[in-house]
Image (tube, rainbow, N blue to C red):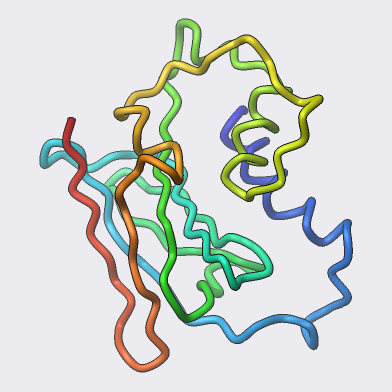
Length: 160
């Protein structure tokens, strides 16, 4: 439920604050990829591609084989051309991670989108299934360049 809420917040919120339709949208390019952790596919990880020049981030969720396709406005429409900082988040199921509050879910998505508001912070910390460094744009160390002329199929083999 938290994953659905996170994805819904990211996809719906920008349209509520000024999305006037397809004519205002930047040109997008299909982006796909695979996420593995220590060689094994990662299921239900949230992938975010963020670029300084883009009006919004592109998002995806991995399937059981670790594959994803990015969405910016419409399902699987891709991301803008250029360099993107990539964050990869998977919240552990069960235990403290499952009980993540709605406020914390909003905080995590706002942080990834660069729209953090001071009043949204919560003392709860999610329990991650992947190393927490990949969840923060400042520490993930993952960058990819989306091209207008080449295939944008990226591999992320995460380690400790």
